Amino acid sequence: MALLALLLGLLIAYPQIRDTVRYYPKSVRAKTGYAEKVEAGSLSPFRILLGLATPRVHDKTAGVYYPEATCYLGVIGLLFALSYQGWLWWVVATTFLLTMGKRTPIWKVIHPLCLRIPARFIYFLGVTLSIMSVHSLSTVYSQPIHMVSSHTLLPLELLNEKPTTVLMLLTILQAWDLLQNSSLVPMHPFTQMWQRPSQAYESPVTSYLKSCHLLQESTHRVIGLPYPNSTGQVQHIRTQGYNGGAAPTELTHILGGSQTYFWQDSRMLDWYGVKWAYTYRRLEPPKWKQTEVPHLYENTQVYNTPHEL
Image (cartoon, rainbow, N blue to C red; front, top):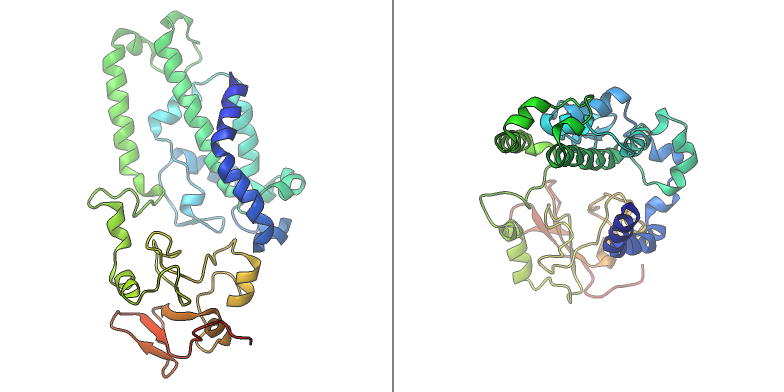
């Protein structure tokens, strides 16, 4: 059954795995070595336990932002997970070691198979503990109380006397706990309750650019669009392309480096067709002209078609 579940999971994830394997050799991360991969995000055992057992307590941990080092399950979820008895504890032990990064020698062996920031393995740790929690809950409710191990941390007598009431109470408490700490993994604008997610993509910037016909078929681009319009994908706006930490090597050559948005006097940007730049920095005329939209500048020297430099 476990093998069947594994195969099904691989089948569902196949499109993502395939594209990642094809793209990764073309990215700037392809040449990342051991030292750079473990430079940030090697968590101590105490920090791992803290990330699992407590809500957000720090903005940064081991050099990474808190969502990458936190996987809070809720008090009740963790209680049921600790009551689990089975082979998944081996998975917990393995992912625990992987999350420690340079604090354990295992990373020196497996780093060619891993991306950077070991702290992200805490997500696998959290998923495994969640499965263990659900398994413990189903075990308690599917077997006679005398067959459940006496080593469990759960209040068996109470569960036996009023199972439905206790289950409803546990569900409400767990939901309340997770809701109170929902900011641990920021998902805005995809989970906000006060507006449709599609509305987050409509802004004065995107409306202006679309009025200028800066669409996918255009020869011009915009650089520095704010989240969540960074890629321009939803609005079909042509941007500089993905230039984050795993940007394509060729694009980083054009832009002068990854995670870099613009240079005021870069001829490369003119050649690349960057006609608009969104930035809180003041761009100087005559090359850059302020538009009617705050922080959006127009490049007056951009080429209409690509030129040789």
